[in-house]
Image (cartoon, one colour):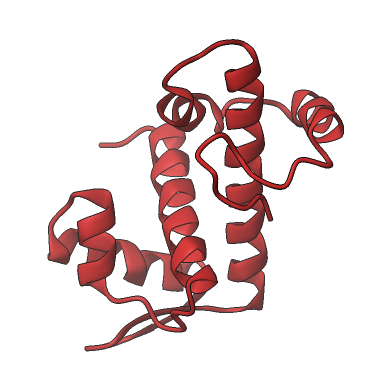
Length: 134
């Protein structure tokens, strides 16, 4: 069974993938898209999307995919911002694999530390990967 931290990390990564798709114009994201982005099976991706729906992040539409609701979009956007700001901090520290390391620590950074990171990089428009910081 997965630990709470692992489940938080999986959900956060999934929400970031959904936000990225939404930002690229997708309104509904299917299991195939998730499977290819997360390197998992289509059935696993479908289960994750159904679970997100049950948690209230949006609606899973059978044979189509998942559509974020307003609350889900807000949380996905915050998760994406958090990840990309952490990447900025890690780059400043000289960490070369900042995206991987950001995924490992984003679920354990406390609110106070995150406020400091937010303050330091509040005017930054892109992360080290070149992606827009929402």
